Length: 328
Image (cartoon, rainbow, N blue to C red; front, top):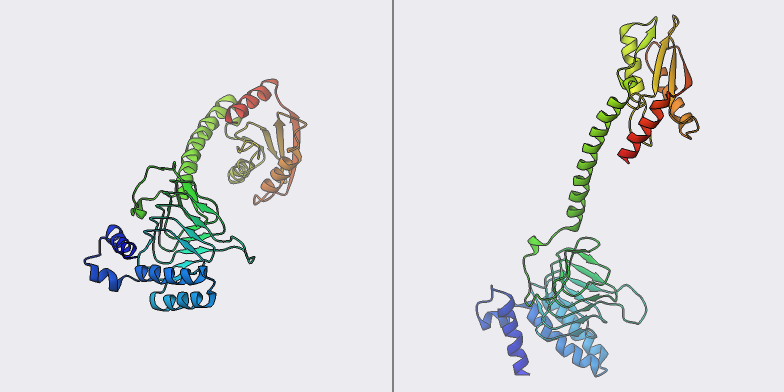
């Protein structure tokens, strides 16, 4: 028994550089006191003295702020640093050399009398405020970042962070000592966002290059001419409105695609927009025609809008298809 007590004290010195003396460890470490209370409560529990076991556990929580159910199974050299708010459920299993900090919860996810709490492997580090739920296994040498919520099994040597906890990097099963550099733990969410932003930047560069290529493909993609009896400001407003009509499949405007063949304005400010689409059977034609009507009708001074569909020039269809294929 005394060998076990000496081992517990030495564990505190090994895992907490703030420990200065044996007397300090014996009197000022609630995590150590909680483990000792647990051993008495667990002995009573295993000998079917359930109420005394629960009572000892309850008193331990009152003295230390740490709740360890007497039915839980703790290995050797388990150290709970600071400890306030730690909860270890009835069917939880904690391996040797585990280090956990304040606020850690090993909780259950079932109301049935069955295995419902996690199993923690050997040499695992669990950061402050982390919650591990359900009958899952956290493998040997794993790390759980502070504030994480673990609801799935963790492979040996792996590091998990976040809510819910996600695997970061490649598991390292060779780690022999606790790694306390919680601030250096990678964030899988930030990494995913960074990769998405990098990909978005590359796609935007390709899109800009494609837009330039489309303009060079189609002479009609030059600024749209508005013919007829029309004021300069009205013509400019019509051009701007047509530039807002986008092909949803390609993401470019009909003007950039070279589909606006001509725009005519009569004396009564009635507007006719002539479209030369590359595919007369395109299911989006009705949508595009409606958008052209809506956009041009919103131009101040326009009285009515007519959209006329023309057959695209023979070369335009092939060129546009090549451009769309290149973008895809």
